[in-house]
Image 1: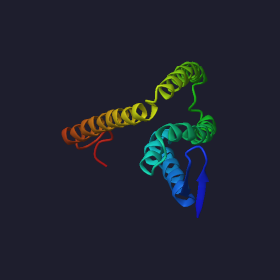
Image 2 (image 1 turned 180 degrees about the vertical axis):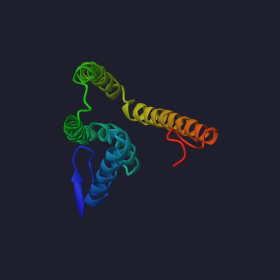
Image 3 (image 1 turned 90 degrees about the horizontal axis):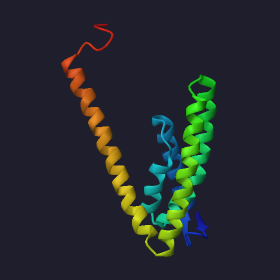
Image 4 (image 1 turned 60 degrees about the horizontal axis):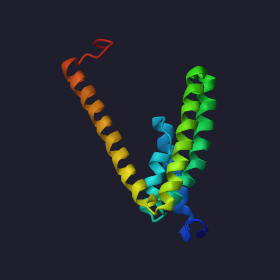
Length: 151
């Protein structure tokens, strides 16, 4: 079943989009991260123009953020002061991002810059996760009993 995407100017199987959204949401829920950084590269991979993929992912990011906030508020895990400061920083950063997006779009470089930045960001995240995994692995090899001793 095809759905026409007027901004991307192409048709796509609706189940591919549903699957991408569900997979990103599942992983975001499991790992406590925003689904945007997962789904955006997947959308680009299936042929959505990078600028459209980034802009469209904002919908899913908002939905995931609101539902995560509700759960974490109930658990008492939200530091509202820190959240407000982060919100202010995010608003300033988003405004700068919109300006930069507009400028890069005007000079015809937005798709290239987004693709390169995603590769750089995902590579950096992957390297940081690998380093943390190696630290944990080496720590467990040195202390096989773990923090609770032998069970």
